[in-house]
Length: 456
Ligand SMILES: [Zn+2]
Image (cartoon, rainbow, N blue to C red; front, top):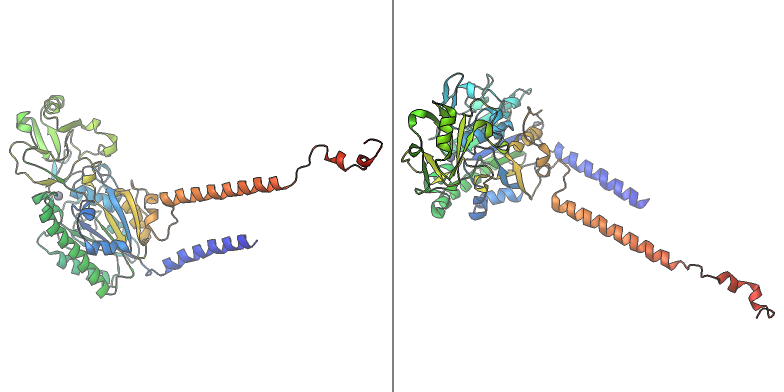
């Protein structure tokens, strides 16, 4: 009886604790989503990043985010805020061509909603709720009228605006109460730009830029504390993709295999999008044997695991370079670092760290999918998610209000239960052995007749 009482008390106190922590939130929870472009997952392991480590210590870390193919900036930023693979949200590359409308997409100054309207990003869904507002500092797509709406507060994309300026704007908006901002995004071009310039293996230069990125995180946290926002705000710091080392020796020259008048090169490297001008099979056969360092797919043969098939903006032939190789028509201006390659490569993965009342403290998880971030953000903001490719349960262990058993814990519980069962079984056997079993003929020995001298 007393054990039962203890267990019930424990159970209900757990429920009360969960709800108690939730009621500590502001009436409308606030979420700030930050992206440092091209922040490869293992930079966290290989470089000293004290401010980011401090941020993680009291929050959560996902060591590798499995991102979407192609592992480029615009497509993955849109996957984060829609929970959709690229074939479903429509931003299938940084450079696109739509055969039906003959439109071309070339960011960052292309503000045509046509490209973005196949999905609804979270900053719009957030604003469709009563008395909720979004703010954005240069996250891709936030200055475009998507479904007739931009983020309420936004900055026009301008690469020369400093991180500090962007950050100060965002914190000011988060602090404004009229209208109250519940969702905000902040984007910064580094360490992507330096990763392209130097290559991720240039330790000295990468160290310099990552130190700056880490200082930016320090500024951001200090600013949020100064405004009194730190204790109640939820912050996600993540990225779109990683980076790998390229070289001047690893170049695939298409001009050696095929004449330029046979095709239009819609997107270049490391995933080249080819629109044939002549017969598709003829173009495909010429490209197929062009290099042992790239895969050549007809659109219908693109592997299912890429989720990169069902969209008109995906061109009839796709070339995918092997890691570190560059596809060019002739002599390209080589970038020493690049991304866009197969999303199964760990060098292409970013990380995710998060902090705030919605998140567990001091928890680390190996991986989630980039499309899982969206349903998690909707949960934090209390929004009904749009249809998406993400799985909310993949992020349960990161969230303070969710019951979650991690793999080591599950193994511990199973071992514990087995030990208890084994102990109980042993005790039962011992107890059973201690009860004296009737010996055969014992009744005979107790019979009075035993003493009968006549029988003896
Ligand atoms: Zn880049």
